[in-house]
Image (tube, rainbow, N blue to C red; front, side, top):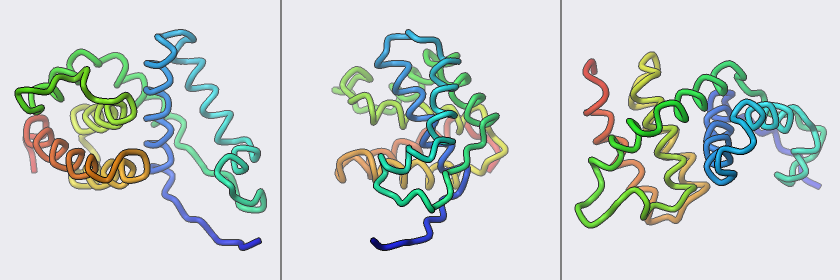
Length: 162
């Protein structure tokens, strides 16, 4: 077995976990509550058995979440879904609607848009880069450029100071 040291930024892990939380909330149709989903995610990431899911050796330290950031990002996304969806929809091609986006792609865009709009202490280029990189592990290659392009356009709409 090969051992490698995997160094992933805690904020990156937290963003991935936030996408998982928003995705779970949508797929479970708001049941269970968002708080119980967040609690499950926090427990999952603290549990060394989660490393087996990722095919990593348990000798590697568990990923660390920024639990406060996770909670704020997921709750802010869910609480502002209507606004976030309007922002995303306004940048889709005329023949596209938000319902045409698959749920993983939509979850990535929703969390990213939330962070761009409501978490302005993080530079918009960092947010775009992070979510584009995350998307590269979850969506088709042809959709990665779409994520990047859409987030660039959204950032110009929601960020006035750059």
